[in-house]
Image (tube, rainbow, N blue to C red; front, top):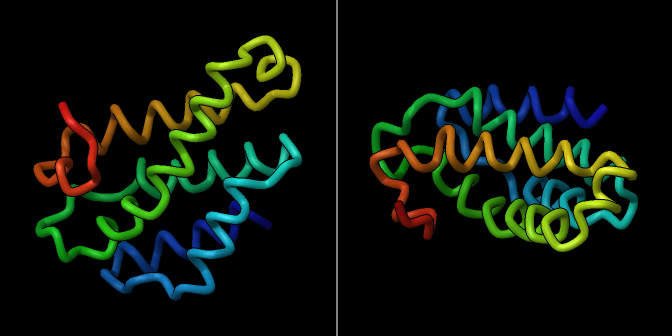
Length: 121
């Protein structure tokens, strides 16, 4: 269900349609979920949205505000994984760490407007 929801969100962003506040609240709540498997599913699905997006043509492109809103929760999950790698490996949340790395290093760092995401090279 999470993958399907994020796939549809990706279509909206691809057509430069900003996501509604309710959708963003749902995504950020999913990224902060206490259940490891649910949180991992949200991290992977939202990272996939970024991974499969195009390089934004301008800072006004819908993917940039979306990326700004998920960057902090994604890096919080990444820090949580880094702080307790053994537990992350046991619970399977380590997959979320790989997804975060793919989104941040694979996409955000090469975007021309990465500084708008508060990510430095």
